[in-house]
Image 1 (cartoon, helix red, strand yellow):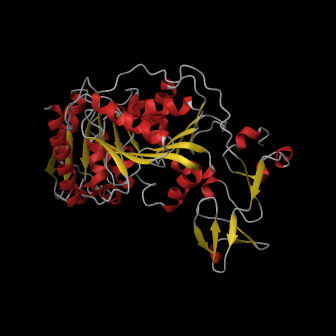
Image 2 (cartoon, rainbow, N blue to C red; image 1 turned 90 degrees about the vertical axis):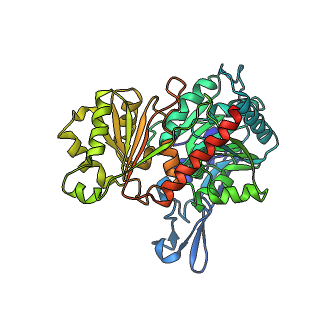
Length: 443
């Protein structure tokens, strides 16, 4: 039960969860979240329409099925919120990060300061491992110093979990909260919020600055409800910054048409080129998998990496592929070397942590780990890279897991596929194109 009005600042909550004493407070507003039209209902929380016959309840009541995973909203129970007052105590120093930016990073950082200061919408297009997070710091510092409320959001839980300690360390004196569906910690009012894009649906006119990381990633990309949440969670005068290494075609069209401003950084902070993709062919691998066989090339490669104690990620197309592949490997290798991981895996956080803390040599994973996670010094293998689950951006992101740190700026990116698909060709070409641009910067 919410008893502190600060928990309603810029945040919309079901009235049944708010103490009665707050409901009578003059600064607390209520509204009916469901509007009923002739053939459909409109949800004011997620901005989506649903046919009436799919969402009716007894007693002429209706609910929204689209955003039901964030608590059910109905016509009979209002949502409650209070206007964002920016009631923060700014403690010095705001930025506690001591690092240095490269000249290229500094230029992008200055662009970001301008975006936040002038309430612009902007895209930062930077290759994987370019140091996007560090480029945000000075812009965030200025915004926080001015008493603004800032949010960093990502479609992926893993990205938020990895970002949180880094941001916490960089802004040690700022109130901060981490919000995602798997986080048991209760909500509290904070100047700096890190959350999944789904959590933005809980906010209303809250943020002066909103940063969306991995903006081209599922489930954010092409999701009308989450794009509505971005607009709804930000103030009418606010700054929006989108971050990506692999912009969508729609974004690049907007940049070319001067409808979206962009900063571009084609080189990693350590100035080494992106590791390029090696493609090897594996015929009829799926038929052989049904016979409990894996390609010799894959088995030899895994044997070599285990022998050399070389950490890596093995990407596979489908959740259903994880167990049979793991079972075959367990007949030849020590199964304590790895775990399998996928999006709805109850132990996903623990397994990722085990890999990060070097308690596991490798993970067999779906595309859930294609972006936003950094395991220093790893290689990657994509098995079944021709599968249509692997888009061009997905393959570029997977390749981008390799060579991210200065102490091992190179590594192996191996694709095993039945054929050279358009997505594979495009990924190979995109990385080569970025490396040509980086070589020019390197002189």
